[in-house]
Length: 458
Image (cartoon, rainbow, N blue to C red):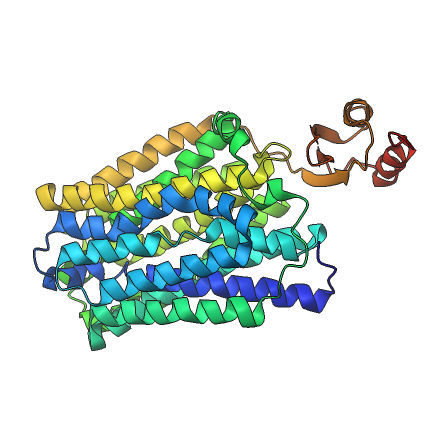
């Protein structure tokens, strides 16, 4: 682990967060404009535009875990560099597209730059254990900010310079990411010892997939991004056709709705995390998302429901987007957080792909209301799945180097310590992974027990 001061770690976290944000900004900018401007592409129809919307997610879902594993072998920065170059190349292909098929190819190529897992691993390498939760929260917040900025900036760019301008800016942001990677983010002097938090471990994939509550959370992020992509194939149409808001002015609608939704969400986040009421808040957000999809089905007859419906849609989406990764980190088995996060990200991007493709197909054959009904039914199914989830335990992870000690003997003793909930010994890494209740654990006792264990051959 790199020795670091607080200013060093702040520099690392904010530079990595900006790397995430710039990349996601370019991707999110497409959401509010493709349904409106996509018909200008040759051979375009609703199904193919939906496929273009989701193509990025398909390639990203396929390559997310392989890129993360590759970064363990050849280094973080070379993999991230390759991903950013591929992402920029895909943006150029999309910017130069005349037909919807070329647009789909560009979006697919963008997704082949699947660097999220490698960026997260680099963050693990460069931050200390005690700062890691805050670092991950900062990166998560940067994605939320980029989503809000993109929904405002996308319509502004498209209305003035066309769809191509969004992709040219996206390519430029990819190159800015390369500058940040090599001129701002420090070099890794020594990779993190805790690779199991840093990325997916292939032997753990199957056992992690079978963990029931993690599977339910994977279903959740799949549905959330399915609904996001499918909904944005119809939401801009409702604003333009039902409320008769000019395309040039859509950003003025999105901006106050997004700011208000973000502020309205914050008290619920505080209740979920600080008051440890995550499951009730989670279920409320899912129910709200389903209700808003159903409410928006009334838009052709009751135009006044559109803006309140969008406000509550954004509020529910942002609340779920913030809650889901936090819950994943809480329920991931000891030593499997990186693997759980990699699987979770793959389901997220797979949901984006199928949401775009299925949403486009349903819109093409059955219209706007059918898309909203499909989304509502899917979210209601998610609500039923989530009902059976156990509330998350608020446990902390501790990594203990073995330094030649007998791992199994130490594990037997550690399991007797009050507050220790899980112990996993990784003999090949000479580490012990613990999940502990921070309110009950006596860290001095834990440290003394480990130090008292004799070292083999000592």
